[in-house]
Length: 186
Image (cartoon, rainbow, N blue to C red; front, side):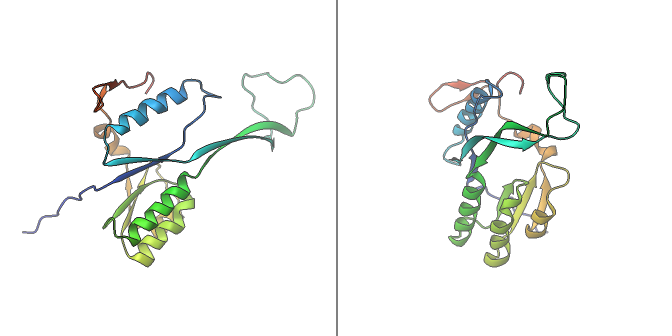
């Protein structure tokens, strides 16, 4: 009888950007707590930062517009456009794609797993699976992942059933002896 060998995780790369508290003043503190908890898993886990870009832009409004709070607009003609904050995470997907391809070409792994539904990663994943020849599993947080991602990955695993057992303990003990508590509302 032949037994399947479990995969050995050799590295976890986490890609993110520090968020602003413009719309939710507590969001940066919650993110900081999570990143500190992740740091308890070093050297296995490394964190790679992109950045957030917030710009003011004119944008078309859906029609009919939906305002919060309701009735926030003065009576009269409904505007077609509004000046809005556009927030974009920049660099995280590029960093992930570059590291994935580099690590494949340097044979830093035998198989990769990528947790995303970002179609910007189709080409790096395709290079790894089709040109380098290493399997890539798509770990997906959504019921219907991008068809483009499905086409280039070796297999798809839905992560929702596995989330419970993978949560950090509350609190997380850091190497320094400090603890990180789970933020309220999480």
